[in-house]
Length: 154
Image 1 (cartoon, one colour):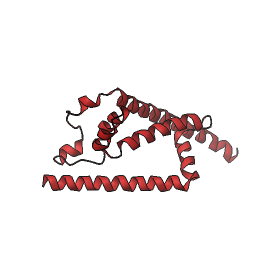
Image 2 (cartoon, rainbow, N blue to C red):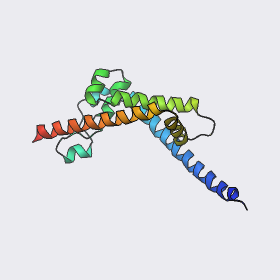
Image 3 (cartoon, one colour):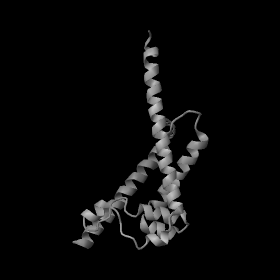
Image 4 (tube, rainbow, N blue to C red):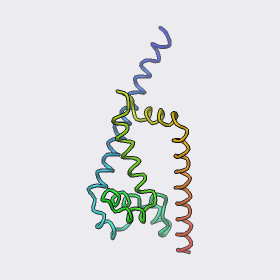
């Protein structure tokens, strides 16, 4: 029996597992976008944060604090409130939506999300550069927000 015959069942198992992960990711991502559309951003304004980090640190915002409220405001077209809640909220909302739509219409049949994303990532240096710059910007903004929160609580 050749090596290809031995590797084939393993490859099918790995592909099946990735397909299940892709299905779960899509379900969660679409549910998150749907929840943002359904939620009422006005009712969210007066609610308490559920962020464990914020509660443990006495009110210092984590890098994701305000993201859910920002997504809700973005989905309802209130971009001023969305940016006030989380600077990267509108961008992450639209990037996720665009990735889901692009995956749906541009992938070859049977390709799983991780493979599709890796192919997109490898195909363009500018994609990698923009991703790195976005990550650095988010981390810098989050650090500045945390430092200002510590200064305000100290």
